[in-house]
Length: 378
Ligand SMILES: Nc1ncnc2c1ncn2[C@@H]1O[C@H](COP(=O)(O)OP(=O)(O)OP(=O)(O)O)[C@@H](O)[C@H]1O
Ligand SMILES: [Mg+2]
Figure 1 (cartoon, rainbow, N blue to C red):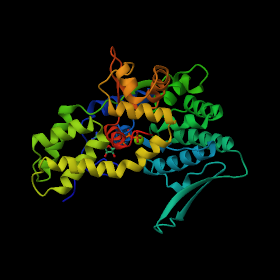
Figure 2: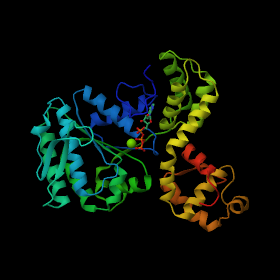
Figure 3: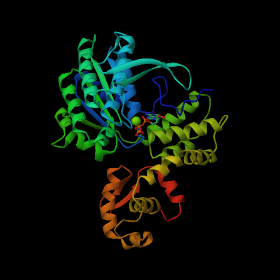
Figure 4: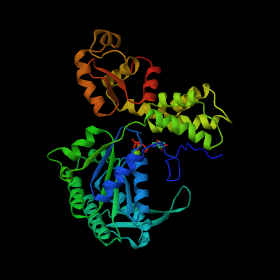
């Protein structure tokens, strides 16, 4: 029986929990030509919402181009990703421009067999004889032309745009801004890591500030909506999810769609008819095992002191951080906490749970659990 809770990125045919209003609002912003920034913590469902918005717009005749920017490493890399995504989007748009007919200056778009599967796929390669910025300007210039010739509006989705900030390249942002200002493209940008993301669109010296994006935040899935979704999807697929099991999923996941979906997937897969409450703990264990390499990478990317504070917050989220109880238990000083908290907040690793008494918790409930299981020395 096909699971209603797939682990792979959701297609437009997979069931979605909530997000109806968000998707409608973002479609409206696209239709009215309002450049929009969709931000939310990691795993909050930004890419999924972006995909749904684009498929709804495509049904209304818009051409959708989605550019994944996760890990983008250079202006050349960005140019290649843009060219590839544009060729794909235009091939699927109303004009159905075959990718062979979409050419970009300084860019080779070729169908090559995948070394892994043997199946042909399109690969974009920037001309090594010209600079990355020249490649990028060439692609953007041509894209502007293609957009102006498209039979209807073109929607551009830039996903994980926070990674652009890592390029530290004003030239890239300037080239993008020039393109966005002069083309008629409808824009939806998605990203996390507010500390990188927000200055890109709001700091005085950043070119993309001129876009005046409308900010849109993605909250966790509402508890009751998630509960109803899980119970309904089980019953639609011929199984029965007791309310208590669905409640546990909603609580343990803290409404983070990535975890809710995974918990429900494992529970669904492990039961023939009606899951018992132990199925939730078993599913959570599977997630912890599967995700531990990722958590290890998160911790490895922090300074030792940052790791200590993160672990302390995972262990004692109920104790206000500047009390001697918290400081003593964790061997931390007032000044260390003061210095490190904003950094961890900027990385969206922690959130404040009580404004007046200064309590914080690790945002990701599974990362918190993993941190609690580590030895004290980080
Ligand atoms: N509304 C939803 N209903 C059900 N499952 C969802 C929903 N949104 C997201 N998911 C699940 O969560 C997973 C992660 O979502 P997604 O990749 O959209 O998050 P993200 O915020 O883009 O993550 P990242 O921060 O890594 O970019 C999806 O693959 C899907 O399984
Ligand atoms: Mg994403």
